[in-house]
Amino acid sequence: MLYSCTNTAKPNTLSSTDSQSSSATVDASKMNSTTAATSAQQALNANQENISTTVSEQPGSANASSNGSAALGLTDPLNVTAYSIGLVGCATGYTSTATLASPNLQVYKQDKSCLAELNSVTYNGSAFTPKAGAGFTTWLAGDTATFSATGMPDISVKVLAQLSSPILSADTVSYQFYVITQGTTNTVANTVVGEAHSMSVVGQDPPDYDISVVTFGGVSVSGGSGLFTFKMGCHTAAVTGTSPNNICTNVPLTQIKYKLVQDTYSGVLTIQQAQTIMSAGTSSVLDTTDYIAPSGTAPTNGGFVTGQLTGPSQMSVNPNMLLVLQSNGLSYEYWKVQVQALVQQ
Image 1 (cartoon, rainbow, N blue to C red):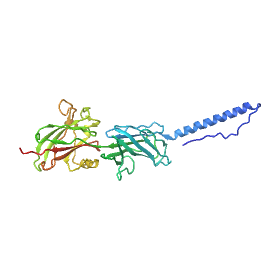
Image 2: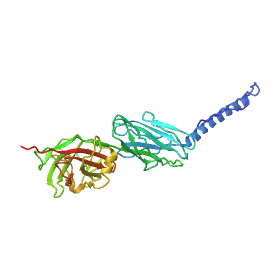
Image 3: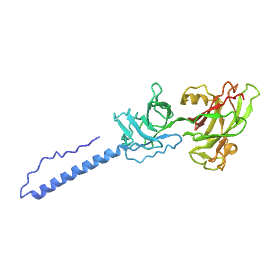
Image 4: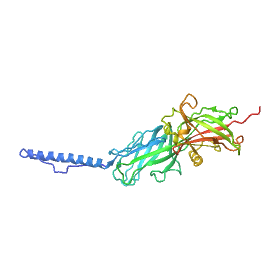
């Protein structure tokens, strides 16, 4: 909004007899024009609000603040190198777009029906946009959407906080997204079934674990299922904190759930498939009893041990499994686990 102030007073014709009084009149006119311009700028500033927003990967904190100026400022969280967020729907008709290079959006005080919409986010070098038919519906807090990128697993995005209608000084805008990553395929060798077996897996966030040791506990009484226990090691760094609040790469152990299922999935496990798998029948990490402290033996960074998990029936016929970890409700890491076939000597 621009304000223009014009001095419309009739120009003065100066003479030697009235120059002093006319000069004073002209100076006063200039002063009034300057004061009007200053007041107009103050009025403009008074109509603005500064709303802070965040776009972050889970796990993360939605830090937000309001400082009374007029900008929507977006943070640059882990592995996010670009984003686009648009201000739309305002009753005033005002629109704007923020990017990582230009992270400010102006909003008017008490404007109504405004929405700050996340249109794209570049994560780990891939540009994610709303997936057709699976985008946001209301854009309000709690609304979720699926974003997709070529050649990458989908990510789930959730609105944590959105603009009020009318705009309030205390408003914040926050989006958080959740990802699924795959660890390396693991094979339980036939020569060590029944014994603890150390394995190397390059795990990725989130969660951030390796399969460190697999213990085969025999075969179930009915169904011929294998019984397995997994020691999960914190991958990037040693576990921090003290029980019952131990943490592996920003995720408390108490937020971890796990499940072992038959691998009936081809290719990459999608986040929707992981959500279905983990919707029931999961086990939770009990910090006080399952926690493994860092030490000189695997897992050296510390971590946790699962309870005894039952694989698919007829282990010899169905040797392929998936171990799925879930953190904070919506992020996953999984591994393919294979029981190697016996070879007749």
